[in-house]
Length: 84
Image 1: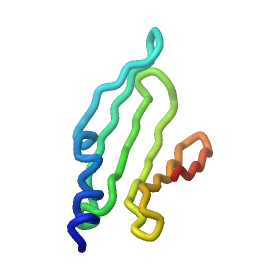
Image 2: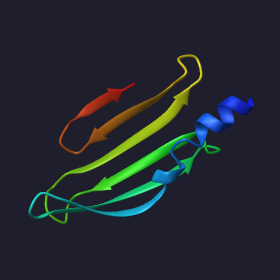
Image 3: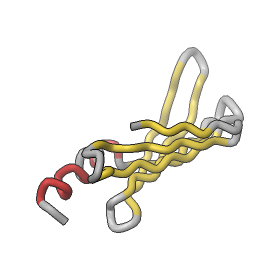
């Protein structure tokens, strides 16, 4: 792994951890963010069931060929989204 790649993989360290979320007047949920697969992938587990039936999962990784982060999101409502 190059020094540049190692530093790119650390860009989302601030996001790691367990988060209590609120939105709008009564939206509540949790988000658990972990580094997995030798710290090359960021896994997000969202649970909004405190106020909505939404649950979701995302994986994010740094694409060395593109020089950009990519994220894929799926949820229990049938969504599948790719972000670059």
